[in-house]
Length: 397
Length: 100
Image (cartoon, rainbow over all chains, first blue to last red; front, side):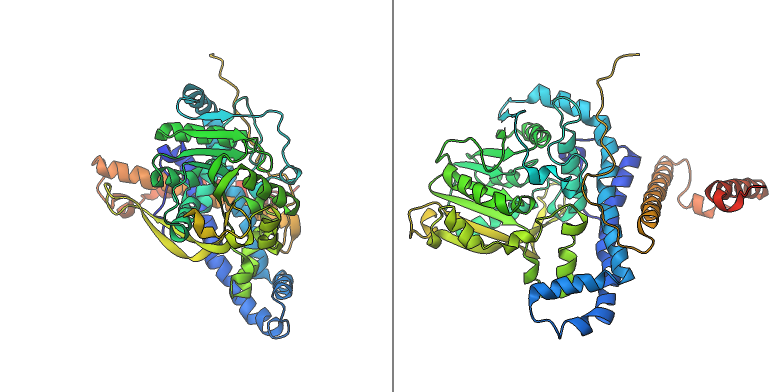
């Protein structure tokens, strides 16, 4: 186990003490331990005691995954993996909460000093948080995306941003890996596409948007999220970077933007945190706010069914059970082609594809850029063009 | 004392279902969580010692390897023995402190 990736204070915006940083680093390493030796022990149990009696007898992939999961729940090694998985998630938030509690009022003062210098933020205190986000704390993060503990709070934005890095250090210290993946897909499929106005739906703390500022220097970027603490944190981060972000607290199904406002609408890791009934309205809203020939670009979790190894499918599906991610894999039970067509995207302009997961490597020298490489797994991805029926995706290029 | 603005207090438990899979159910899971949290404290303490040793070496307060070469004398060994016994008494009080 190695540890090449860490955030500095300019990236996390909080200032953990030595001991706090030690606990946070331990939480990061604990997760790597859970998904290293602990998962390997559970996999040996699966191969030795489960696979031979199940795999030859069940042809249907989904049924096999379900039976494999049931069988694994009788194996001590998998039970330990499942329990420690949940505990490692709790340690990510708990180790960070102490730092965030101490720094929250300072963050707020910094935000108040710079808010609106370049960009803008509109919060909606009357916003109704969707029921599917109210019924539990997503990711087991106490308070979820939207809870405010003090007035003008940034706390859960700071918690989410630091925790996201500890959860997946390979996504980079700016937590921008998903944006690098979507941008790689956009460049591959539509190399001549140059958006002037972009909106990111479910933008969170906006890490995925930093690569878009670099890729399209004159671009105007907007973001929508239900969580005011995340948006305030994103605004502070943007102002520190000298970037203008235009942010709005709203449900992605009812953004309030004028029709035809954007060339590109992105959604990074959004849909698996919604639910079946919410998807049609969000897709329809994305289509409404795109201009003619505008592009919808979705990047989300891979479909576990596409992973050949049944044990890995069960492991990958685990967050639905241990991490308050109820739609984690069920989003892949939707017929996305049909959903997009129902939302008004013409069939010929829809591409269901994959985007390479981009893995961060630190710079080899202090004056060199970080090294990003494509990993072996791919995000589930959608490109869809708003256009008259029959028009193909390529016309946007 | 100057009035400080109120700090947030973030709960250390998320809302939503919290399944337990291991033998022993909730009580053993709580113990596993406590052991994991204590392991984090051990790691954090060790990191602090490593930092201290590194800073003292850089400042030439001690020679590299001086801590590892150090042999406690009899008085130090006695002090550590007393300390260990008291620590074990505190940790295992449920096992060793029985009603008379």
